[in-house]
Image 1 (cartoon, rainbow, N blue to C red):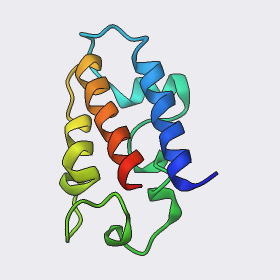
Image 2: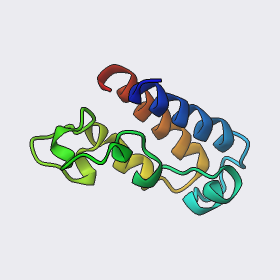
Image 3: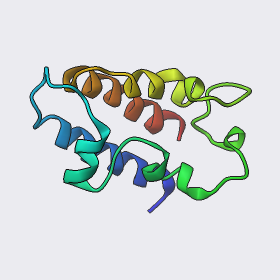
Length: 103
C-alpha cells in the first residue's frame, strides 16, 4: 500500500468515526485516539511517519517553507482548529480531497 493509500484510509477511518459523534459536540483528538487508536496529528500521519529529514520534501506541504499552516494547503490547520465534529468532518473531507489530488 502506498503512503497516499494509507493516508486516504486513515482519513476514511477518522471521518467514519467522527460521523458517529454528536455533530455539535466538541471535536477532541484524544477522544478519537482512545476509541480508534488513531487521531489527526503527526504521530498517525502516514506522510509524517516516513521520518523525512524535514517537512519541506513532503508532497502535502503547500508552501515553500513548512509550518502547520501550510500542511495540505492550509486545510489541516483549519481541521485541527475545528470546534465541533460537524465542522471537523467538513474540514477533514477537504484535507482528504487535497491528499487524493496532491499526495
